[in-house]
Length: 105
Image 1 (cartoon, rainbow, N blue to C red):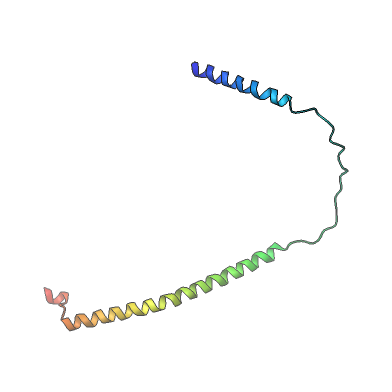
Image 2 (cartoon, helix red, strand yellow):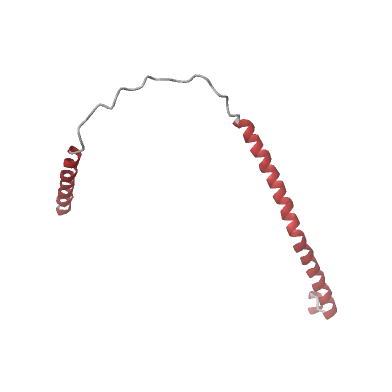
């Protein structure tokens, strides 16, 4: 109950503070007459955004193709190094005579 009373009191107090400042805003005066409505009916052309959409799509496809090509070219040295590593491990295991699963049983 006390909260509601406090809220109402603050609201009324706030309105009392704001209202006198609005009254001192100044006198109302005429700002002039409205201008007559004018509309230019001439057009300058139209933006063909359909062709633009197709052009963006074509460029996006080309960018995707180039990115995939670049990805493959970046992967090539790493793949070559990994294949060489696997070959070296295979040779090393053969030299060490690493026992195979069949030999361990």
